Every structure is written in structure tokens, then in C-alpha cells.
Length: 90
Image (cartoon, rainbow, N blue to C red; front, side, top):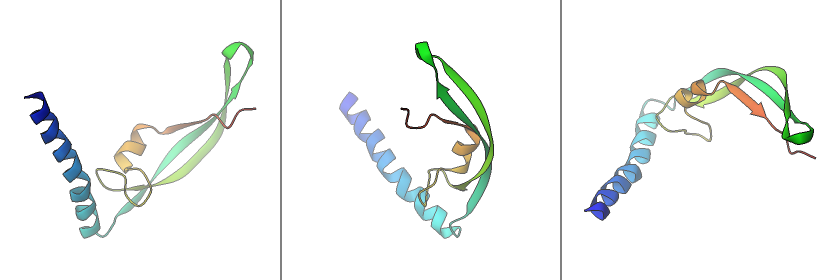
């Protein structure tokens, strides 16, 4: 029974993205923008961190259920309007 349910869930997920892509293309591949705040995180001794605001940035997003065209979906980007830039670390 569990394998059957897992198979149906997997099939649903496998069909959801192509369907979303097709609807997105039929609508003319709509894109949007979201303004996000960028914060630079600097590591300190003892595992602590210090935060520096780095202004705002306009990010491209796709008006779809899933991210299309190499960018995230607008509804997902709006949920995380603060971008924490931790850098590569030295």
C-alpha cells in the first residue's frame, strides 16, 4: 500500500512541473520583479556573526508555480525578501 501511494505521489510530481511550464509558456512566459534586502554576514571569533545591511536589489522572477527560465517563482521570492550573503569565507 505504501509503495502504491509513493508511486502516485511521484507520478503527480513528475507531471506537475511540465504542466506548469506549459501554462507558463501559453501565458506568454510572464516575468516579474521583487525588491529584496541584502545583508552581508561577517564571521567573528567564537562562531559569532555580525550583520551589515547592504541595501536593496531588484530580483527577476517568473509568474508561475515553479521557477522557470532559470529564476525562482515570484511567490517564493516574495516569501524570502531578505538575502543573507555569507560570502566564501577566508
